[in-house]
Length: 118
Ligand code: 5GP
Image (cartoon, rainbow, N blue to C red; front, side, top):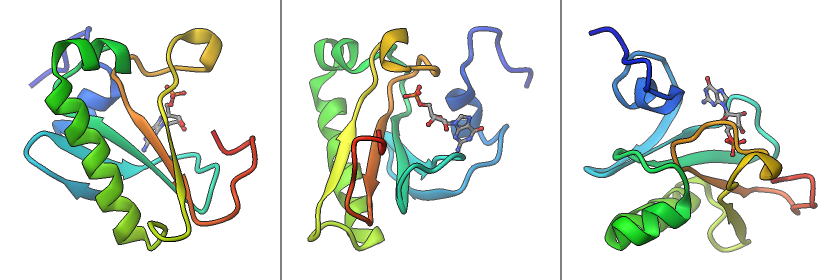
């Protein structure tokens, strides 16, 4: 089907209309590699239902936010960075550099993370 004009890139990835390197998927979440990785492990963790940002997600569906965090922890294990440590960040709004307005956590790890790995 034609993508709706209101679809973001991430709905297209969820619907398999745009290819992505998917590393893990659950009933409610999907995790795939960032196309422009800023750390050895850089995976985007996305709820399948769209909210603009993490605060809207938390307010509307805290269980789904927990699913996103649990998927990130699972991916950290799969990537072998759970023990050494990782970062999970949610850019919110333009000043934070948010470009895709479908909430996503950046899971960053696999090397010692400097401030540039956001
Ligand atoms: P934001 O800046 O909104 O927090 O993060 C959006 C992220 O999506 C960026 O890190 C960017 O590299 C990534 N990205 C942009 N286009 C694509 C794409 O087509 N595929 C994948 N896998 N990641 C993308």
